[in-house]
Image (cartoon, rainbow, N blue to C red; front, top):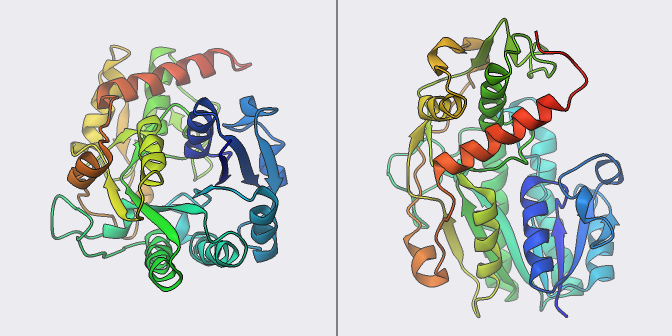
Length: 340
């Protein structure tokens, strides 16, 4: 039986990946902070089917202990401070976890299980202010936020460790991937939540945004720059690409995305259409929610992944958004409050 260690097991990607590996007959170990595991999380339903190793990505001894205990054939490094927008307020922590955490993991692997195959979660945010579109594995990085800068550092160090120590480290330059398991502080989930509130005639939502106000207030969903455009795909598809990378004989880097561009306005229109509502009557742009610098028009060229991994996205943009809106409607219906 093959063994896999997943850092960030409680996150969206970690839970989808754990399910995939369990289906394939793996013994799965998850690495998580104790406080994250013992509160409801995306992987809670897997308790009893996976073994959880507790620790912090900021602590090298925790990472080394997890690697030694699991002795995994495959390691998936998904742990991160995962919010680009919040990285402005938490820049030192973002570098510590997203950058140095990866280095500590590579060191632990080098010393304790050099034969393990490793997946490093890189990000399309690394392309930043782009001048070439679409982006592929050769496109230069130009990060515009602390999250992206930390990811660039970890990505470059993954290559250095791969070449210097002959480690099997593959990096996935993943474009935006969403699902019904996204936390509410993510943009796509806020839009799905707004549409759900509109469907249920909730004018003031019980959940708050990063400014401490209801996500939907007086029937309005406040967002930042409505002109941004992204390549949005479904997280369940993307974790399959992670696994495929580690089945190759030689490690490499792959851009993973749908190759289709949608604006935030498209996202709003699709979400509110799911509930037969007009998004323009419910969504407003709030300058206070616009980032100091905004990532440019990131669009994936996944040709290499299609050719070498035989990977294709299977869930459409519309179906992904519908899944998210449906999940938010169900969640709100089950909350102990009355629609107003």
